[in-house]
Image (cartoon, rainbow, N blue to C red; front, top):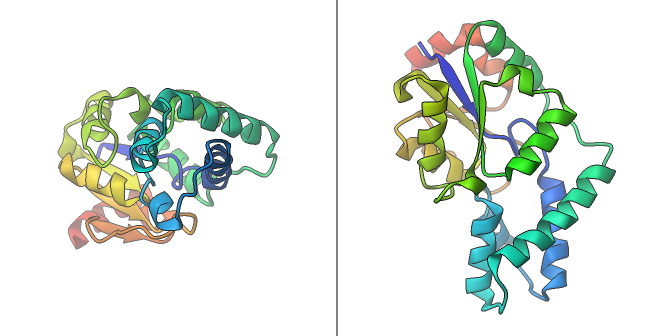
Length: 221
């Protein structure tokens, strides 16, 4: 039986993608580049720093990744503080409470910066449910590299085969599977153009993976 769940954040817990989309595109305008929809979609699940490294290489920009990161994060901070409509994804708070009340260990494993993770967790009072939080932005490698989930499992203090990941991006799913951790893909309406074929299970609604349904889920795979 699973003992720990490793949550992605953007697209799973909260839909900050519209804010990130706006912040990135404001940054693109600031540095005078045009990023195609396909290129932008390929960034899903990666850290801001990694994305900025790729942008510099792709467009041969005479800037450092840190400069681009700072521009993008300034835009995101402004948007976050002024968007009153931002809400948790439907059903996820009930799922978090369900797992927590049944003694599961919850760890957040997100490519977002820890500053943004803390903004979300404080705004929606989520710290009380999670044992630990880890930011891919603080690691050597970004998703699809498995480092973030290997470290998240370690933070849970459970074996990888006692953990499972909830992800909504191609890069996150590849990272989970490369870490040899069971992966549930959430077919989020907010995540477009992602490949869920490598996930162990694909769900449309969090009610499909409540605590009492996890054993049935395992036996069905």
